[in-house]
Image: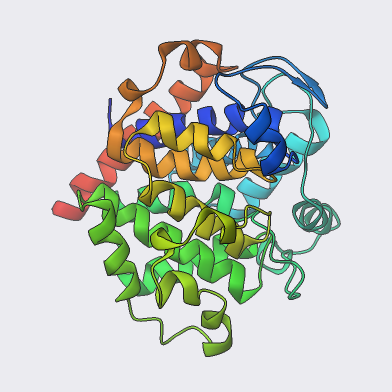
Length: 317
């Protein structure tokens, strides 16, 4: 399987694996851990059901497959179909929509231009743009766009819902890290490269929020100091920590599902990175079989991969 498909499907599996443990504490999950893909009682969801993370990712992929570019009006329209009609969901049920994302989509529905819809407040830095930015990382790798274009696209895609510089910077760090993994770098070497990037276009105050990632070694932090909330910095730290401290996809996903709080998003993002490194062959086949709408998701991923291969050929020529 291609790295592109591995990343997308591992993302969806992580999402579905983490849904039943979302909002539970780490202490609760230590006593009764997630060991398999199971159903969820709150809300009542059958096993393999993914959440808003995969729904927004699927809509973004579908848009790109149709437009062969990141068309912001088209993406926003598809996200609106998700929250109003249940399009792109696992079972037709819309749940766990973030407040900042919902507000941005309501802005768009009222006629606000896409790039002006996202919230810009310091308290609007949930992980809602980080959880759906994976297609940009894949596009950035295959198209080999320059750094200026990559940063511009990161700003624009994040700003559709989350326009504060902290959210944008978190997306850029993740996008760049995924590109390094796709280039075949060891995960620790890729992490070192992240620290060495030129961040001069970002505000020093915003950069301070990421000091444990960029100035220290997030992989060496203890479990007790790693937070797993929906705050975008916590989410990014937790995902990198999980990746750096586990050596196969199964362990990354299970540890993410048992880390507590925003487990679906954390397992999805960490899973996307681990999927690139280890591939889907390293997880139980039953998890893939249980994944809702797996054929549809594979179809989206394969179509996106075909588009990326076209961009790769163009970039070489």
